[in-house]
Length: 482
Image (cartoon, rainbow, N blue to C red):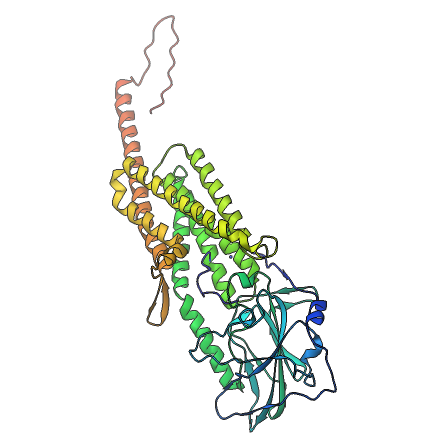
């Protein structure tokens, strides 16, 4: 599935296995296999010292049949799909090529006549594929991206992948078959979803490896600013927990620690799904959009309310958690695996405006807390106002894009996101405020200790050291300075 590399700041989960269509679906849609039918014509490919984009035309067929991986399949009646992209953009998927609304399995086939290849070959897959795939060469599976089982398919966020061709296969007739699978909710997130969005690349293994490294380098540059954000978050988390351990009376330290933990969890998920296949695509969406994003906004509101020492915290918490549950439930209804299957597509026409209202309600609540806090503590108005504004910007990236505000820039080849910058600056300001409050609190406590010590000395002067002896009376005393 095609997604921005760092949109999912929010971001951690247990892999959720998405249901796949049964194999019988493909047989109902697909065509019959004739082992003895004449194979399709081969496209000549002559490799020099570089790689070749396999723009086709490819043969394409929806449905599923394991026999379609074999080189002697008659694919003459299949659709022809051109993989050329004149402007360098992604190629539309099958939903925009005559199969709207279709999800499940589909196959691509291409027969080549490789010439003058003197070194081992490899095949690089396009970086954007909906949503999982298996690659076969002359009927032999050489690789896959996604977890395929007889009953389920687990898809992951797209990553660069290349697969070596079988040993000894360098020249002659080569049939490449690609079995793809798309989740039923993916077409509702992209109007041109489905299958390959770019041409595979065939070339010498060394050249293909270099291209894969460049793709990984692009990913690292795209989310590199996230590492700095995670470092700042970890430092702020440690500092907040240390301050709370030293001063249990100040609950704001604990709320800030929870803000840092939630944001750090979201950033960790983004790193994991971009560099590993530990978390499935559906689990990623649920964790970042449904859990972490609403939770982080709620924790920011509660932190500032605790920071300004506003009253009626129980009522405020009730309102905050209620809004968070509404936002999470509504977002879940518009995400896989519910959206497009259990939840009808038309539900988005009224769910999206309602979710926007609920999320903006969080913003109103945050600024209301800040307003009453400024009235209560005027000494921290300037720094606190800047930190509150930056926290709001960090949590409303999608809404800012709706009003055409740029949220990403390229600096020295690295993509810098407005949300990351806002989070870092907000935490730096809050850190200064926390340290200043802690120092002031410690200074006040030392002043209290000194005043108590002075009072004790004065009282000891006023109280006689030896109790008077009065005949007929027993006199006792207990001294507690306070």
